[in-house]
Length: 162
Image (cartoon, rainbow, N blue to C red; front, side, top):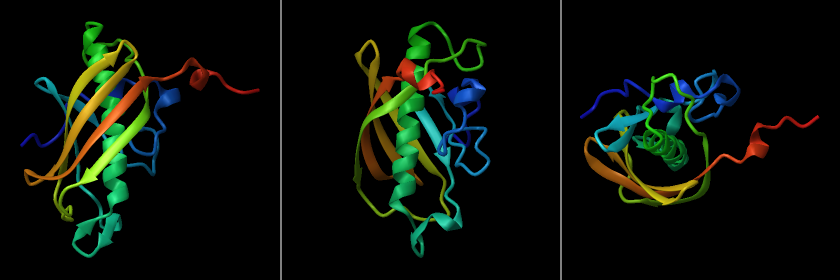
């Protein structure tokens, strides 16, 4: 199993858009999810903390949803960035995405104290939308399956209200 993500797309997001609670590197209190390529699939690895407990021994489902959400938008960013001829760390600013929909099925209870691995398969469904099919695994056991539809971030998100 891949132990860590070496080149994460979130490392290339501009500072103004690096405050997401899930994947923002500048959010001191956030999860700091990092999404990168593993061949033609995307991967995010995260080890839940004790405070992410639902019941003793198992992870809170909201954490899984957050993991899938940020993995989906990061995966879409990776896919479009690669389509545009770039990879994380290339010096080119990647496109940013927002979640248009998230459908999540919990398959098995997710054990605590085990690194979780979200594995995504990006599918372009429109020039500005990607669908990311994701499995969340704990020790190679599939605990959740999800589909995220991610859309290129609207320009209105980059405009400050005055």
